Amino acid sequence: MPTTTSQPSQAPKSRSNPIRLIAIVLLACIVLLGLVVLITWLIVKPKRLVYTIEDGSIQNFNLTNDHLSADFDFVIRSYNPNKRVSIYYDSIQATVNYNDQTVAFSGVDPFYQRHRNVTRFDVKFTAHSTALPSSVSNDLQLEKRSGKIQFDVWLKARIRFKVGAWKSRHRTLRVSCAPVLEFSRPKNLKRTYCYAEI
Ligand SMILES: *[C@@H]1O[C@H](CO)[C@@H](O)[C@H](O)[C@H]1NC(C)=O
Ligand SMILES: *[C@@H]1O[C@H](CO)[C@@H](O)[C@H](O)[C@H]1NC(C)=O
Image (cartoon, rainbow, N blue to C red; front, side, top):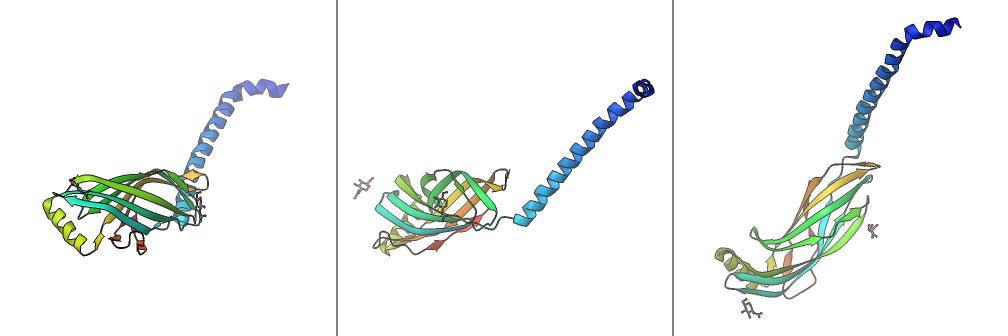
């Protein structure tokens, strides 16, 4: 009985203490979580993704009055060398360029890439009478006569990293490749290494 009578006077103090305690614990948890994320990130820091073009062809090449029409077909290999980091590819835009002029666009379906996974995808591009500056068109014509042309294939992807259950915010991955396409050998490209940068 004496204990119950003494409680009302202590109540305000004992009620505010748990709230303060919960707040402190919550704050500590948030700080700790931030530290864990930071340390995890530093430990698993993603390795550079490895991109290569395995095969490629150019067909129906037609350069008339500074307008280019052509069909391109590339087999791109994407390797995620990371042991713990998986990747969401949420969108991928692809372009074929010549002397910094974009001649054709394409896209790649979104995909999820596990750690240490190799994914190959086929990207087809069609240039529909793409207008080119005449200097670029002249260079292209000259290079065509030599039997092979070096194009630039650029990929721009919005990606997210996944480590365990944690997912990063969106980042932009840029990949650039410079395959040399031969007209005499429609599908027998030498493996071309690309430069990938986040
Ligand atoms: C090439 O393109 C021009 C202009 O678009 C067209 O007139 C011509 O027929 C085409 N040539 C071939 C071989 O398709
Ligand atoms: C990579 O992942 C894709 C999609 O999940 C799968 O189809 C493919 O077999 C995997 N490749 C390797 C080498 O594990």
